Image (cartoon, rainbow, N blue to C red; front, side):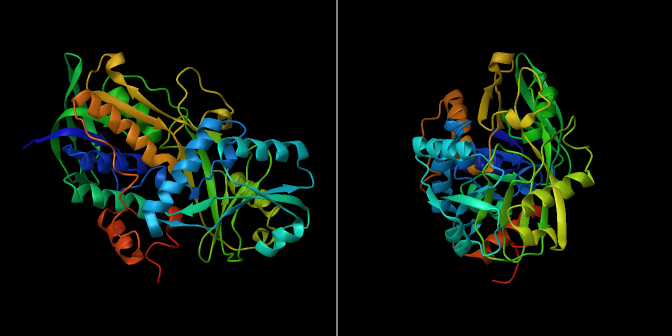
Length: 408
């Protein structure tokens, strides 16, 4: 027997479940399908940085402003899905004075608070910092636990009437007369869905799903490695204050520290090389800021694929591609009831979902405002309940497996 739904969302990462929650709170009948457990793609394979926006301030001020605004919202609604560690940008001896000043001025222009610190002041916060540190800049970065965040959004979506199917891959999309008629879903769901509207929230795989509907979406995915080491020295998130490069972010967890990352173009977000040099380079470069991590035991490594959107032509230097997000209305491509949401960052997942929900509601004639910035997620103040949600949706990713389910 088939399944009727008003909106079918394909993709169970942060944006997809955030969209399901948003639409459900607006009273829309919504079904979400994910081919694996929730957060099985990019969301659950990140470094877990809750961006203040400082990383992007001088190169992408719009994206930086989105980050500082949304990071505050996430802190308000997500509770124990985040850890408010603070962050530091470190200028080392080989780094540019001019770049430090440019970044601080850019942060000020978009409303990101900063505080300049001397080497001695930095050592009070990071006792093991390198002797090569010249100065630092404190920013409101933090840590996000994506498995908890995604599962809590899914639980709230279902509590408000949505249906979430995990281990339910899309196998075929049928289009006729300029609209999607039905979507065949396999796995545990094993059904045909008859939707009024379909949203492609598959991240790095957006081009593949769009192609099933005869639409082209220009993705330019790039892989990056994360290395978790056995180091629990106290420190905020550390960022190297230079143009973004390999091994310039150090993210504290509880008992471990995550080092990253690289940026290497890939043709296929599913099948790609995982190179030893990426691990070695990330450790070496991060150790320039925090020397003890050079000799710390490697606990685990994982790669993620960034869902970068570049519709014109793919650049080999994918660090230069915007980290902004885009909502694509495929009515312009001849498929009336189909949209994709691409690009973006984990920090701005809720805003991405809101923008997409606004588009969908406009197309469906639904007059209802977004509520997700004001309503706290279920279990936000109860880590054990959050971890129960993760188990319910088979949502454990490598980013936070050292935290989720750990004794509290």
